[in-house]
Image (cartoon, rainbow, N blue to C red; front, side, top):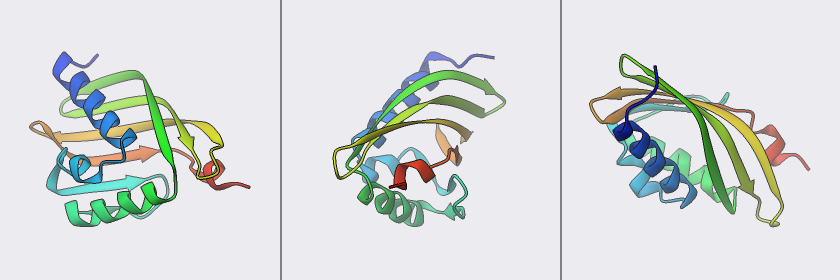
Length: 124
């Protein structure tokens, strides 16, 4: 089933925050004990650890721009696919597909799972 307008706005705000590399605002979308996993990296738990992991990732890129595609929701879980264009520190760009799975507690994300291959981002 498709998502409602409030969840769409939430995702638009979330991805705008990511593209701004605003880690402090990013963690406000999460529950205090949220679990976050990016690709094949080990999951991290809690806002402090997630802030550190995401801030570390942001340091490896100059910027990003997400374009959202299909979104589906069911029983507190939302799935979103899209493409992200990363800008590297040498100003080159690469566009990669992703799928994110979000589990919600109310309006906050309790589980944030990113299914993407970031290998090409760091390839020479």
